[in-house]
Image 1: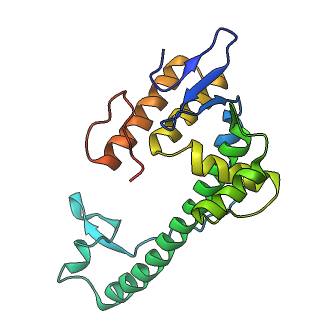
Image 2 (image 1 turned 180 degrees about the horizontal axis):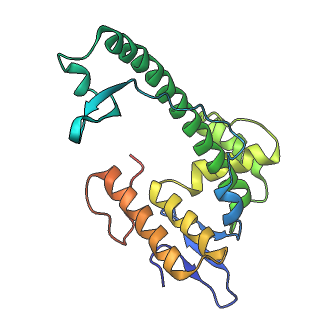
Length: 210
């Protein structure tokens, strides 16, 4: 049994959030993996090349890097091409980061709306939103059902990165991912948390919200 979620006798996969809320993880893993698939990514620019002497007088073309470009034998044309490449690479990295942010936001929205069912969800979300606005001065966007559901989940239910790991692993489990692949995915999730926190993440409830 995973430390991230539980499987009930009827096969329902549930995950308990650090906030105490319990969510059912739905079998939509295939769709989750396809979120953002329509977004077109730019082609990564290629660095200029130089000729490297090989065995027997032959030569081969190699891409320049930050060290090779410093070689005294590097031509002025190559240096100029390297500067153009750096500018293109910076623009590429910026755009890629923007797209990654968009996809991550889409993925989070998909999980909250399509991937989980919150047990004990308040029946009157508009009343909940009004209390958040008047009592605490929180900005709750929108008044439609989806906007209020997203706001409730973000404010009350999913509070830490580990909560996200629990849910993602639970969705994959509910979707029928085989045990070997599931174990590998869970290990990868936990290693990611470990790297972000700067220390080992055990199976307990570690707060990673801040």
